[in-house]
Image (cartoon, rainbow, N blue to C red; front, top):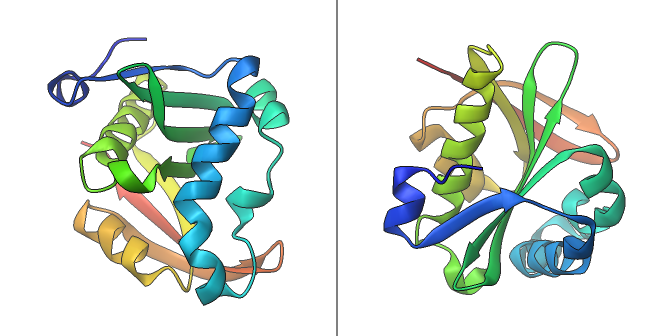
Length: 159
């Protein structure tokens, strides 16, 4: 899988997750989302996933720096759209461009599959994430409850 120019600048390597990555992916996700538990009042949806199953059934990409897994991207293809199901970055690597690199990769994948938009959601109480996505060109189009979580759905028009 090619590495985007930004990833090269950050010394990141992106690659498809393999079954043996499941525990490292889960650990990354759990570390990335742990601070949201108090605000939401329960574990966020990504912390409840079986990543062995997710790796087998979805498109999961890992970001590595110096051989260490530092970020995770989960993409889900629906009948009509490519959906970012999860972006997680180890807390100590946040604000270093890892998440942005993963989102750029998602955009590249969407374009490669002929999509003109990319979709994602976040928890309604994760206001910092909503603001981050809006700064990166995403527009909110819906709020609803799913799986017992209040979710904000956003879309980015791709050029």
